[in-house]
Image 1 (cartoon, helix red, strand yellow):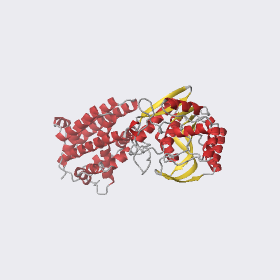
Image 2: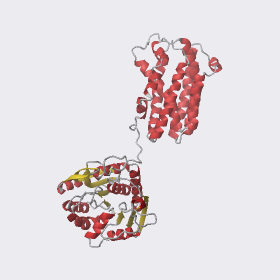
Image 3: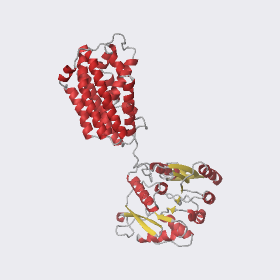
Image 4: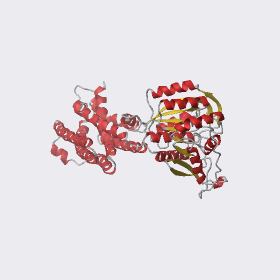
Length: 507
């Protein structure tokens, strides 16, 4: 199993777009777990870095030790290391813990132009860390600086092919893979360097390692929202490696991630703004296991739900003042409704994909069958025979409601059907519980007390619990847009329930 735990050793960015703050967002967006060792605190925003406070290397080492001795990471990613002493300490720690997968972002200069690594520390980075690096991710200025400081000379870039020359030279410094980021040097579509802003058409990131060169091409995006792109790219690579992707696939996916982040950037700040780190993360508006609670408390649902469970028909059941003829009419239409309700639950079994859900649907149908027998016995007490019920025509409101539910069952998925059925399932339980606990409800001499008690009995409470659990289990698998569609179904079905009460005079 892949180890999705990542330790990031880097500096903090007070504006949240780069450094540790960006790293943690990226890692979370990739479904991985981020841990940190802070090397420096920066006072910065999108316009620049105003100050840097270095964390003593000894304390950085204590942070690293604390992580490794408890939650051992599968990948280590480094960013701003700030000083030669910190680099020396990190190099020792990586050897001590036998780290095999290090993604090193050689943070030397910020997008805003601020120097984040003293020139005298570049040599320590090159000699101590590069030989331990799995994937090195320099931009072109950083790659040129590493080559210059190592005595290999810089490369004059005129065509895309020159990126491969740089990558090969940097690879000789020790890392297993080198990704030369081409954002600083856009090209024309023919592969030649763009010399004017109008000619910028293509950005090429060049990955070299394992004896092969891989070009990752992206359209040039004219954007100032590039703050923290280097940090974000390296953390995305680290996340992909931690999930088991091979280097080429890990880097390609990371490049696409950053490209989309720039395209959908929120536009924060007055300078180089941050990217959108969560562009592909779908966030549900409720916590797991609390879909129904969220649903009933929504501002667009709550008034409709309140109108349903506090309808004058319902209140008349509680105080015993509902006209008997209205209740008789309700019992007849409710029986006719239950026939279609059973059909809908049988359809739910058909639409289910596993035996648990198929069985649950079948159990509900069986429960309805039993309930209908009791319903007939109950009707006899009011002088209503089965023959009379079956000879009665469905009221338009009953037909509209039941056919709406069956239409949802035909056109929607399993969960859509369950949500269409939910107002009935949840509503009767909520109404009975509310009336049973209301001191204004008459218990002595109330003709309808038996009806109220029927829906707080253990078998009905169990049915509500089973149905609710199934909806909760499936709700967390939906997209936010699908949740909105389900809410609309629930509201409409609840209005249909209100229409059912409206068939019968409540006073």
